[in-house]
Amino acid sequence: MKIFLDRELCYGSGDCAYRVPSVFTVVDGLGAVLPGQQDTGDDPRVREAAEKCPAQAIGLGE
Ligand code: SF4
Image (cartoon, rainbow, N blue to C red; front, side, top):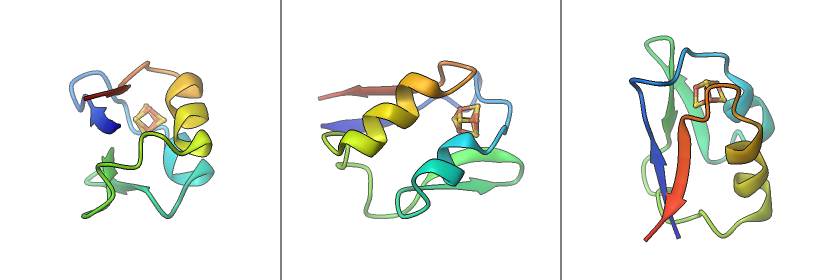
């Protein structure tokens, strides 16, 4: 499952990078998915990060 991170909604809280630093990072003050990690949406930790994003900026899908 792919991760879609909407940088228009994100306000850079950094929660996702704190929860799953192997997948998410913060670039220029906004959340980002690390290169090569876009297909890790099935990881339960990524699902949790998406659910807990305070801006609801992380979507998972195909
Ligand atoms: S948890 Fe959400 S709002 Fe915070 S940096 Fe990540 S995507 Fe942005």
